[in-house]
Image: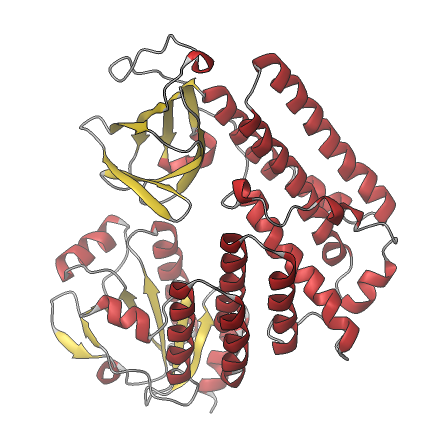
Length: 475
């Protein structure tokens, strides 16, 4: 997302609250959160912490909302407007207002009230890091020692600003933890990414060219920081970090010299390292599950699924995640290339029920959309339209995964200025999502004229999809 200056000024709504008492003087465990959503994606926002929904808060006629926290555990909470989510730090005595325009979510979001300075600081850190991505990419072309010095300068400058801010406003220990973690783990992430940005052909040799102390920062990693378990910089870093250390471990006992994220042995190494280094149950289970699902979603070797699943089940203690992973493996076994696609029932815009297989008459690309993801809704239809012009030998079927009527579907498409040809929705959406493993939403099926699966994991935005289509046309 490109950086743009914040264009909306801070507004305080007296109708909601009057803030005169400093939070440090407050003895009770309460806090307030309210605000205004401009161009709302839904009529409510959802508040949650970690994976647990706290409450659903409805907007009033002016698209404003208010919510009181009582007897709560301070920390990071998030609110979801139906399109995007945003985290905020809530501590006892806070009285935080937010104003955001969903058309420019991150760039327009501002906080005001007690607790706002800390949240605006965290938001500014996020935007600053986003703005510096190009700068970090450029210095990643330099020699390791020069790169390291420049990256350290960026980190040191941020830490100095944080120290000044912390002293000036006497910030809490909890805020300092999150702010410092943002700086540190983004720095760690850039260090992990450097070898693959700077080089890129033979990954095995990449690690050998680095100075011996290049990864010394890994000594600072806290693998079990429960306070940061939902914090994006920390979570993103751990995911990338385990990719790297698993690859380094994999090269020690394999003949591979290039990175292959579909390698079974490499993914087994990754699960083993996660299990060995992480003690925190929540962090460990989530990382194990993330990598298990990631492998299933990218690997075309169905025969490898059971082996990795067995390793995952031995290490994870989360019953729900084990069940979901097993269900996904079983679903993909039925979606193996060469199998006929499940004959689910679909409805067109006129509510006419049809068999999915019956509407497949020639090579077909089946893609899906979700009414809550307006960006993907638009880009997938635009991409399909482009491919349809280039490959008239193909049919293109768009299927909504939502529980909506034909009328509602038509209204969504009309509202987004999209056509209505070959548009369907499932008769039983939850069943279809499970049987077709429609996660992530950008997953695409390529099937032949007999509804036999050619690829159950195609990606419309991947350059390889056109070669797959041409191959099927020329069969």
